[in-house]
Image (cartoon, rainbow, N blue to C red; front, top):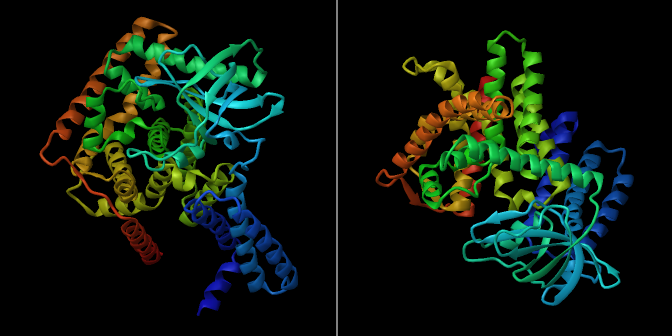
Length: 503
């Protein structure tokens, strides 16, 4: 029985490819859950050579060759994870954790200004007469004049990131950004330096993003301007605590976090509009893809936004290809490719997990809900509203167990709040985008479009506040890890049976 099932897999090129990707992803997951101990890499190297030896020995046997290749991809996944961990030697910055160090480096990321202070990531280059590599997160007082690309001399005591009561996996969270050292106190001196061409391009991106923020502030007042900034490029620094709590209790925080779900909704609305004006599906598909690329560039092209854009493209591919088996392979390969670039995001990046799961929901759960809705004669809504509602519910079903596991809060009003609010979000984003473009061309016309958009933004804020203050709107409920595994396992079985029964 098992041999027959195995034969069906290795005789199918697509299933074989899917199996190799799964083995790579499984290894990254398993080793991510272990401690950061690079000594494991020695055993993985040993298993690699053993596997290659047996692979040559059993090359003619298809079944043995398939199993050994699966094991090989598992080993490669483990090695990729440990290649990302810096060695603890004097050439790497983390070697000096616990000591005061004077070093030279450059600002490697956009400087983040918060109410509590400024966060700066410095990529080290030299200390004394030695070359060192690594990144350190430095906490400074507010309103620092530092910016991306600045060359600096830093004098600080390095510390190893540790978990906190409010953020248990803080060290893993920083590790996914390549940060293995932190510093709460530092003397920083800027050094004159000419930026490279690449750095100038990135600086122009950040300057463009700041220009967009200035236009948003000119078109809308607080808190509507903060909401628009959150919708357009995920900026949440200007949100006051009360509105943040309202969004959290109402279960709509996801609308101000750039994710695969948000971009997928935007892409689907754009695709529907293009089809509605008479374009054929192929041309509309490529224009929507271009729209996603433009949106990613518009929002600054950070790693999380690029990842969300990739997920949005995958959802568009699902609508274009139509076959779930093919798009499933594309999605798994996309995940494996992302982990090849950064293996830490699989377990320690909630944003990656939510984007991936919401994309799965849009691809696999949406068709099922569409089938159910076609049988509900009482379910009468305009097509565009029905599509948004189904997309929202699909994403909620797919991500709710993870949200309960990660954040321990269940919003009982989330389905109703999302139904009341989500339908307007794509239009607010589209109108906001148009208003900002017009503000560079003819500002009075931009103000007119901005005023219409203001009414929608005000509606969202009022509805979020109203739902958040319902009795028992939100309750604390943490899902244990075994419950998370069981729910997703049952969900996979249910969807697989639905697919088999529909064939």
